[in-house]
Picture 1 (cartoon, rainbow, N blue to C red):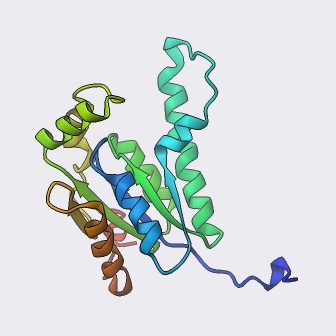
Picture 2: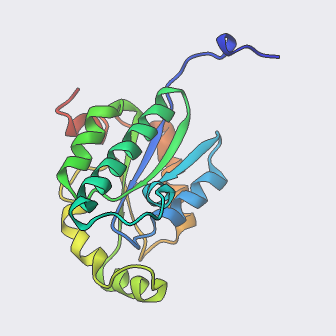
Length: 189
């Protein structure tokens, strides 16, 4: 039996999929887990919201509960990567503080920031088809989600299916340039 002290230390890689609701992040993540050469954990933000009990949250506390959930999610991803686990992160950077929080927590050279884009008419069609999102949610998120403007790689899910996007991301990994998008966003650190 191998002892914990025999496990060599390392930092995990975070493949950070950022896009609006219904842009295709989860579908790309599913394909990535299928084709990547090493073990990865898919950690979608939605899973953290789903873990919360169904106890009603008083209206005046909803924003606080949601903020704390997002903060916990960021720290869980950072902890998994710090322990040497590779993570596919499925996120929506629809508020400035979310990106800033991630920039303060993640090792910038260990993050591949992927822009998952999709035109608004296709997002709205997907929302109607899904039926589990408020109409217009993705359109409202669109401007803020990509406002930071810097990515390592981008995919347009209206032009490429999830498998094609996943293969592009996988092909990008071996020769990741530096500085990474996270390094540039942190000012070269």
